[in-house]
Image (cartoon, rainbow, N blue to C red):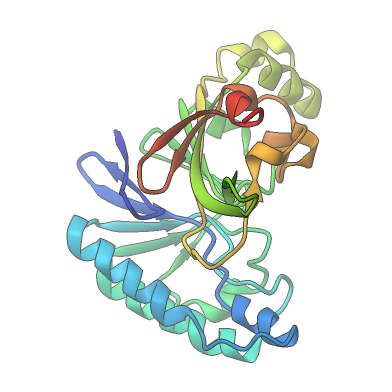
Length: 266
């Protein structure tokens, strides 16, 4: 299975006998929250649809995986979401043979908004062609740790830059993080009350790839200003099983800017 970032888009291509596009964190309806704060912009769903169509026209993929947070409101849905989310899914179903959503923490009630042909899966992640796919707000199911590569969203990772005049700006990034498998085995041993020996051969995950948000107007968490793993989103990242100091950081345009432990000191 080939895993390929689709530069300059915040999207991954999984390529084997079947091609699949992976995106995360659309947060459709986010503009409503801005309106409540006095910042009025039109619905941004048309931009998300245009970006998706642009990518789909280039890669001819069969499946679209969305790793959570299709919607923005957590437990309910705004009036605009009842319009915009079905509209986005209708576009996606025209472009792909199959659309699969791994729900995130913002996707409460998504089943009411999605067409029946959209496959809404387990919130704890799914296993597809040797790859683990999850949103990242929950612990993944044990069998997902048999994958060597795990993909997640949830974090909206960014890097914070400061120019020579002291002005600060951020850019969305990809994170490629190695795992401390021994630590992960110990955690699951405690969680599931299974022996370390029983789990050691089962846990094969080697690296975690964190996707940037597909909605480029969203803010994110500047990972180079985070002091400890306890400040990050999601149990996997907070558990210290993902070795953040050794994370490789790539801007969405494909530029490799270094390991996170170095970027924290710059």
